[in-house]
Length: 68
Image (tube, rainbow, N blue to C red):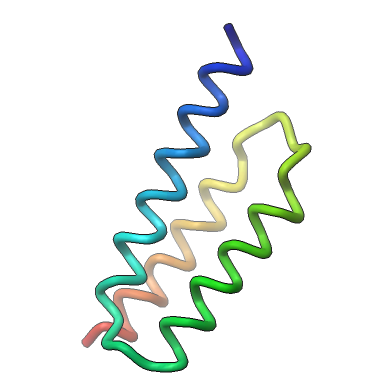
C-alpha cells in the first residue's frame, strides 16, 4: 500500500512540474528545466521518502520568475 501511495505522489509531483514548466515561454530554458526535472527523477527513483517536494517548491519559484 505504501508503494502505491508513493507512486501516486511521485506522479502528481511530476504532473505539477510539467504544468509549471509550461508557464515558461517556449525556449531553451523550458527544455533545460524539463531535462533537469527528468534527470532528477531518474537520479532519485530509488528514494523512499518524499522530502524532495521542498526542493521542487524552490524550483517552482524560479520557474514562476522565468514565466514573467
